Length: 371
Ligand code: SAM
Ligand code: SF4
View 1: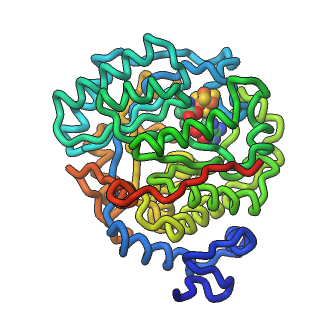
View 2 (view 1 turned 45 degrees about the vertical axis):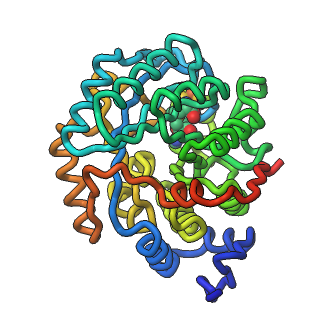
């Protein structure tokens, strides 16, 4: 096997914590990004796949210390989009060529919320053809996941946030509702029960080291995930972590680290789908182009109506573009073309990694966090 990074002696098969940490900590170089782009082209092609994002509800039972939607934040105007408004935006997105939609919400496993999501999934599959529905709604019990899959969901995004149990505990209250083990188990269940499984981490949390981020990459490799959405941490003034904002790495460093994480993951799991996240675009006006050029191949245009979108504030300064979907898609297309990439409309964009995983006997997937 040829060495991909001669200077660091990292081969495709032998990613090593210290080498990954060295690459993450390195000064800007373009080598890593050109290797990542080669891996992308050879495994997924240079197309950019879109997922229409619907921020269904900002009601959440959890209290993650970094998130503006946390239950104990009294200044959030809570909403849940009604069924008709959700299906209207999905139908509109579909008419413009979108073939995959993400339903995202706070974690709320109560009956009313699950019934609503199930209805949306059933409607989408009955009314629209060849669509992939993605859920991102936190930890749910196995039977609820089964039910939603049966109703027509295909993909699930559940960020592990950090693969270190100790570090995870620093940013979550210490109680059963925020159990690291439960999060890990849910991820394992998703992967083992036929979901296209996505995870990711927060990059640039106070006190985070490049060694921890290297472990996060190794965790995702070991977990053998199909999709990844990871991006920079941004502070929110109504969260407990706001008081540590002075210790957060400068924006440029968080952007650079995020791009290196994307590039390294692209090389480690070349046929996965990796998103250029909204957080990256919030921190850097060129975040979309930079994320794609680092090896990402997925973008999530936001379909949430403006009236709700302004209340879905995970962090300060979230980009709110009130363009029509047509102009948003047109702009995305221009941005992608400018870096030699093409938006793939009318294509649900399954990760080749999942297709291959389903066609081969499952190798032993030992899922163990870094306790
Ligand atoms: N509630 C579900 C969950 O936590 O899995 C899904 C929605 S949640 C808003 C999606 C992701 O937002 C989280 O996994 C977290 O990584 C990210 N997030 C929350 N607060 C953030 C912040 N301050 N900066 C960047 N990302 C943040
Ligand atoms: Fe809720 Fe998700 Fe925010 Fe945590 S990250 S508070 S689970 S919305």
